[in-house]
Amino acid sequence: MATIAGDARVGVATLYRHFPTREDLLGDLTHRSFQRLRENLAGAAAEGGTATQVLRIFWSAVVRDADDLLLPLTGGPTVLDESTRAEQRALHEEIGGVLRRGALDGTIRREVEAWDIAWFGAMLAQSGHEGQTWEVVSLRLMESYLAGLGTS
Image (tube, rainbow, N blue to C red):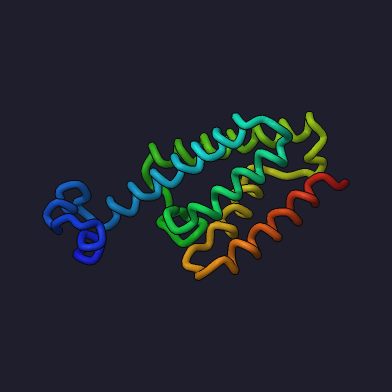
């Protein structure tokens, strides 16, 4: 907690006032991560276009934000808090809406579930990679995945 306080440029007492335990801090960061993902997905969906275009924009944001996300699928804590579970469920429901959109617009012809999209996003969100190498690899993987969604 002292290291985190130092990195945040606040006193340890200030950090403990807001987050009495390490678990409280990690839980809050996880909650905020799900909120950010929902905001990114909503922004991608608002841009219009096909479902695969929405997923491309969304996953690109996941890659961009990887170092700021703390999620269970990327090594973060298990979601125990009900409000965070609600954020996670809402994200999956919204992903389901994108998948239904893809079935209607013909860009998603494979059977795919919201969890599949979440797992792939988590793979793209691996943080800590230096330079542009991971971005290049992840964008190539993303394009391959998106192309596969449209084939039967």
